[in-house]
Length: 222
Image (cartoon, rainbow, N blue to C red; front, side, top):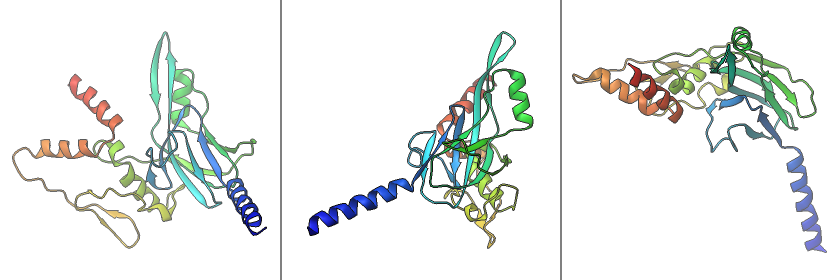
């Protein structure tokens, strides 16, 4: 009897836990770049388009919208700048989506006024705060964590102060964090005659695989 009671209790606990866990999924044209202040990675996401939440706290994602759009008889790849989206978590599944962009005109319209939809799986709209993430520095994609930390410490529209220093690069040279949590940039000094080359190497190492590939393609054309 005791064993049966323990088994029933464990089953009830498991069922309760599952029912209070939600999955956040992105539409096919939405890529998660960061989740709750941390740069997205395979260890953080089940794949590039979903992750779990299990509370009703404030959550924040940084997304990029990508579509192949028509431009006359040609087709071009459109990629938006990073967009910060802040919303209140729920205990049910959530879908984050962007409108379908079929033409260059659609892409230009979205670029001027991007709108990311956040809804429950049953279609209930969730209130959000969203705006573009300002990008700074050489190879801004490689500076996502720093740019996001600075944004969250700035008091901007969709910022979450608690995420201000959630994922700062450990190798960021001469950077310090003030009591406010905002990064104070220090001067970077590189010794030697090939200072420019050394700086290029440094930022190349900080970049993700996708950014490195884009940079190499650009360099080949120069």
